[in-house]
Image 1 (cartoon, rainbow, N blue to C red):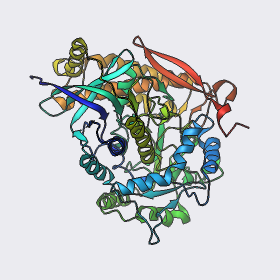
Image 2 (cartoon, rainbow, N blue to C red):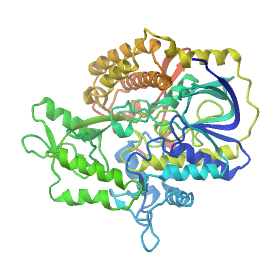
Image 3 (cartoon, helix red, strand yellow):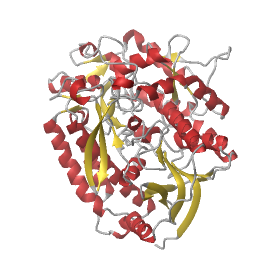
Image 4 (cartoon, rainbow, N blue to C red):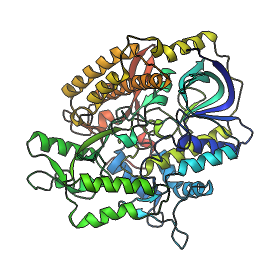
Length: 556
């Protein structure tokens, strides 16, 4: 296969054309129309990412009933458990209504009542949610192209080029049959490539850790990598998720087991619900079922509250399948993952000069959600809205940034990346990437490995990760889609390695993070973030104290 090499130039390269990347591009071009902005999306911008594959839910704060500080106090105590960046979370809440107005102005249909207020549904004492139609990213693409944003579809950003600690570009390749290679000279780079989801849950499986791996290899710091283990209850028969099902759990004896881990309705699933399922099963009280009882009608009504023309056919298909298959509502945990650990500051810049990360790539890495995998961070709708929030902050920062010509990319580094990208095409006797993916799913999928953790069980999982690591250097592919699969398998190994390395280091339980061998929260020793970084090819750990003394909400 003859590879055509191409040289591209831009002011800002955005890797990823989901809701975060498109938001950043639109915000940036509206604020500084003279900048040359290029989006590279490995699938198709407007269809890529997770925003249009789930519920299309936005978090909404009823600020006529609560203040931003009310929510912050609730979140810090009940969800983030003092591990969050309270300043960033407070800003997110304060910008809530303005973000919705901005999205509506960009062409996204945000449903309203006849009196002009937003049509919302309460989900907890401090939050509500609002649904948009699932064409939201297509509307954003139209807006971006109208503003002059260049978009290249079916093009995967692979590695980043850094010179003297400053970003100077990236390499990318086409996943189409031509397999074109691109060297992109860029003054700034934004990673908007999503989280790591380990390909276990179909709706979430497009999160493959591309940006996490690229940032890590470029020397950027990772933060909160251990909070990448989100799990949701799913129906055993259909594999459909059950949002809020943790409030209605019963064991095989007919005993109501939700009361074993909570005495109030949860805003979203806590890890304690996963632990309860596990304990019921090992004690011989399974299987676990859901029984909505009198709430059944209300639960069903959630699906039909909003009229969404574009997404209606998908909801109808899903409902028909579920009614035919899920006759007993038996449930079990499904790992979703949501590792989003690229460390960023309040302007979304990473620890590498000129490199930014937004949305699901850096949600936990921003520190904002605290001790919980994000999204959804136990707040439905925070995933899409955080991508919009971080995209706006990043776009605003880039609009005012200073732009200098990037350093020349050495030809030797380009050659190294060409060899790296296309190596699987030359390994006729290599391993199928499915072997690697299966090993990582075995290491991350079981809830007693990755959610309700213990030293000896994590060591068992690490052995599986080590086996996968031995295979990733010799994977084979027959076409460019296979090449992409090989590299995505490699990203999964890195993410799992980071998860267990950081999880073994955190010797406490806090928020979503549960360790059977360290069941208590330890503010004296572990009110700190774990930082993961590649130093000379070795994964190293350090800690950073949470500046709790500067925040408005303090531990009691």
